[in-house]
Image: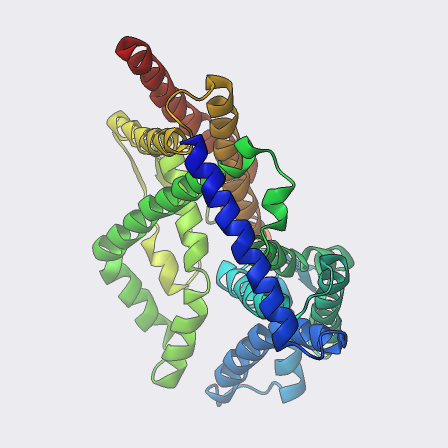
Amino acid sequence: MSLLYRVRDTVRTTRDALTADRGKLDAPGSSDLRTVWASGALAAGVSWLAVLVLGVMAWALSPASDVGWQQVIGVSSAAWLLGHGAAVHVESVSFSIVPLGVWLGAAAAAAYLLSHVLVRHDDALRRLLPRFLGGYAAVLAAAAAISLSGPARPTLAGLLCALSAPVVGQLVAVHRETGAIADRLPTWAVRAWRPAGWGLGLLLGLAALLVIGAFGVRWPTVSSVHDAVGVGGAGALVLVLGQLLFVPNLLLWALAVVAGPGFEVAVGSTVSLTGSSPGLVPMVPILGLVPPEGQYSSWLWLAVLLPVAVGVVVGRQVGRQWARLARWQDKVLTAATAVTAVSVAVGALTWLGSGSAGGSRLAHVGSDPVAVAAAVLAELSVGVGAWLLVDAVRQRWVR
């Protein structure tokens, strides 16, 4: 197996070298780095334009509105900054809950455009990445300036946090196109990526099944709230699109329920495996998925075994990354890195997808990121540890 890994690494190195040579041949103007700035600005402009179009559509389809178009552009720009993680203030009210659909779309756009930059330019990463991020930051600054025409005001700390989406996109693109990140990590850490991907994907898959089930059970409530809002025609389409941007938030809240900590839709409310006490839910159709008041059977706590089962899958994937006779210390390090990476990713996304959605009872909506990350870490560790123990006993028995 070690020989196979050596051959695979050699093939990857050769492929990367050929890709770099092709970039030199196909990019006669690679010394001109102005296109890198433009690519960063374009990556930001794509998602900004999408949010602006959504905001203008909502304004145009509200004939009773007396808001000027300047304020609409300002509010839409502030909403785009919020989607990047920048908290905004409207007078004394703070909004910090991030529509993760915007954040993930922005990170994907940055990764896609930077990938094309890396293929067509042979300059060192230390020259390309700051320029790409500079172009992106310039658009963020422009959006912040334009948002001043509306009532929302982004914070300085929030603008720095807004760079998280392009930075994550850069990391993805650099890893995919150059492998530079993997070259600087020990082997046991590199081999943790695939198991971590399996773990995060399966956890989100479980959450998606829970959300889909909630749609099936709570659809009458969701549709009745939608009718009560009184938006029809094209306005209903805008309302649906706006709510779709928060679907990733719902997945993380559902995962928080399965993991144990649960979430809240208002201060003082709780939705967990113990029961549901949502209180007065805002008139948002998608929040009709929140279960009604009630206490649940203690048997429902068996749901935490689902993340443990995901941990078993992660442990199995760790075993596949190493030869059968590999050192057990390397396997343990790979497993620990994988479960830590998953818990950190879940905690970071939960932190972005939870926060203030207004004043008073909406001062905090979502989950506690530290509690969710700790629960995921513990449950995955139990599953991974169980698999590695069984695998070690089986190998010793075979000998």
